[in-house]
Length: 81
Image 1 (cartoon, rainbow, N blue to C red):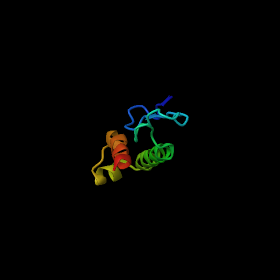
Image 2: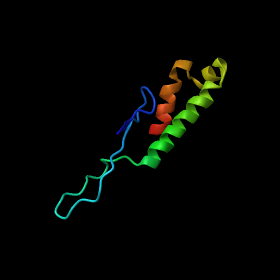
Image 3: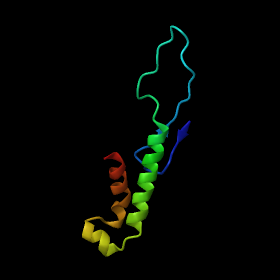
């Protein structure tokens, strides 16, 4: 199931639900399924950053060296870092 959280977001999530493997069946590779809690936390952090920067005036953003068109990029960077 694919959950596109936001258009252009760097963290579109794929969630896989599987039963435990049968005896002799290979184990799932680590990292194949994304941690749901981490995905939700990243989404929350992204939205919070976009909202806070979006409430700032153009002058406040300019003082930070951010253009209004850069808000989503800055928010994605905040999640990645």
